[in-house]
View 1 (cartoon, rainbow, N blue to C red):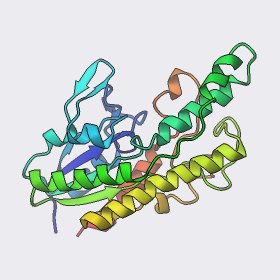
View 2 (view 1 turned 45 degrees about the vertical axis):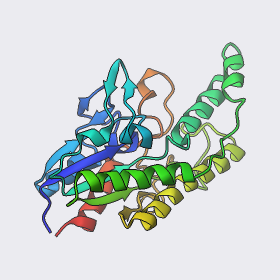
View 3 (view 1 turned 60 degrees about the vertical axis):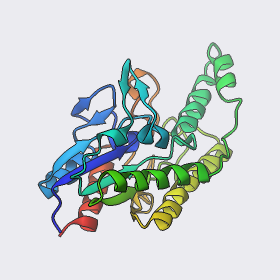
View 4 (view 1 turned 135 degrees about the vertical axis):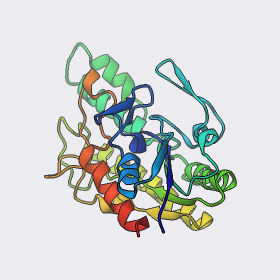
Length: 259
């Protein structure tokens, strides 16, 4: 089957913050995210609605405020002629990347006596253990809503690239304790599990970027995600996909949906 109109929904792991070229700074959206690469390979038109920081709620029915810009619910931009829709979301529903960034900053700031009090405050809260059904329900509703707006669309859920692995070296790129790494990995598995349950419940397709990226986490010889970068330069890209990671997902999607 050939596809003519690709639509991308999702958060930063779909938008691609920090990857040049930037096509929408407020959304943290790259012109080389996996949706752009896929649409180009398919020769299809692309409607990229991804926004960094999005939740399933801001995809469905809540406006999202980012960098003095208000984005309408992503679903409102889905055209009825879309025939392929990709979705990467749910991690923010379970506070996945936010928790990782908070603990990375906490441990980095604790390394200097003059920032230690702030680091202690940031590190006071443990890794949250939220009900994965929060993400499952959101993803399920997104799939169902897309099918209502674009009845002819094939919906493909794309879960998250692996960030931390069992043997991820701890240091400046991954400034965590062993216990924190273990807890964050468990949180990541809950996020990926939500995709699997939602795909089964809705009959949507699922591309398991989490499995595809095994061996490519932070600190690996060929990482598909960035490590932690303190300061303004790393504010949007830390622990997010790099260009190689986006290319890997696009290639897998092309194998999955291509002729």
